[in-house]
Length: 328
Image: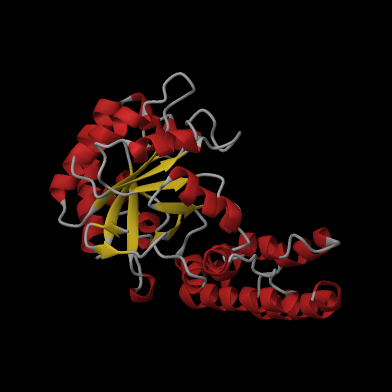
């Protein structure tokens, strides 16, 4: 599969852009486990043009992450064009437009999946961004606003006509948020539309290697994107590739392997963000890595209240010593 001139190989696996999750440190770990294409956390176009510190910080990427996309969102055409130019100046591999985020504070302003109610404006923004930058532009969106307005098949053709290089479709409407089951049949309908020639990437409910294989085999997508299933389990990329290569389910990581991973992730976070912020932003990940442990509430309390990374390393050692016999 290729996005413009970006070669991604056969059956590529994408890390979904997720706010407060897919920062540089988490991407570092996911790349280590085999993610073929990754994206930054989504970046507000309004924040970029106001020079908001948090938005600007999200533009930073590293060579080892490539290929990597910067994802932007917004509801004003002019702001989106300016944001796309600023993102391009940060030298990613591509620019992705977020028309899929369903959270209220974004969608109710008409941004993210809120744009599903205004398809003409969505097309206008996409076309303007494509014409404003030299990098490939891709789009991530949903099936429609609600059950009665699943417009994705026609919308996909219109988006392709703007000149985008690939399209990612989450198999839910905005009204579903993340509830219910993702409908991959409409994703397949887009992929099987003879008029479509750009790569189609499917997203939604990819939680195991077996489901990932079905997404490719049954629905014919060019790539799959994985989001929430990576929480506390960034090795899912390795699991899927192992299954594709061998037909066998990869053994679960041992507690020793999970502790080693948590340490590397923690130290990378501190290296990039400093002790205070690095520890604070690791808490969500550390608690997810070990959520399957017995008596987890006691363990979690330690992980989410400690402020020193050196003390956290000691707690991780204690976790290994306590649970290694039980889980290894």
